[in-house]
Length: 196
Image 1 (cartoon, one colour):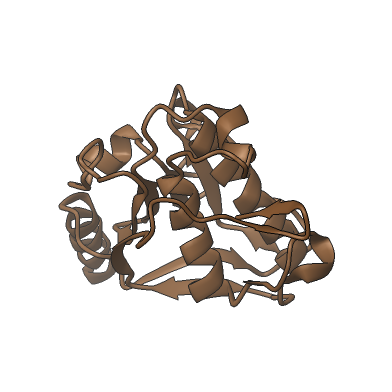
Image 2 (tube, helix red, strand yellow):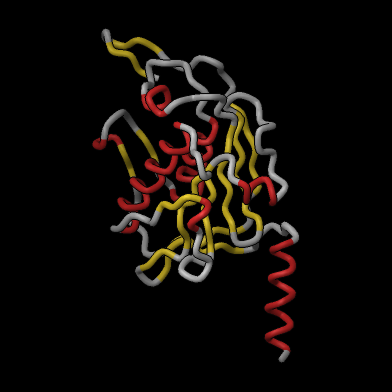
């Protein structure tokens, strides 16, 4: 009976928006979290999902499930990685639609990890074209997470410049970061090639 009361108390705390003390993404050879997109994701949110899935596959040997917010299955995946302007992010009290251009948030609340940013009306084609100045806040939130929680490094463009440590598990503690890119335009020309 005491365990049941503790479980209800924890559930109530999560529902009230408490910062999660521990969130398991991968353990015992399986994902306990999925990647969740808004019902109508923008181009940056789609690209962020692709980047997370790609790097997770390299780290864990398999890719996670990516679902729309209307397809979330809490039984199959008790934890969720919410990308962008989801209803869940708004319900958790995060600044959906209130972030400056390219500002981003990495935060755990309850059973969710929230990665969102100021994306503007950036399309997928604009987001993947690094020659364009485009608002990519949610993508930078994903990169922030990969770099700080998974020790991913990008030494130069292309797969040979990627450092993605292999992992058997990923459990993250409470996260609460908010940042903005310091330069509005970030690219240079080197040897006739455009690099951002």
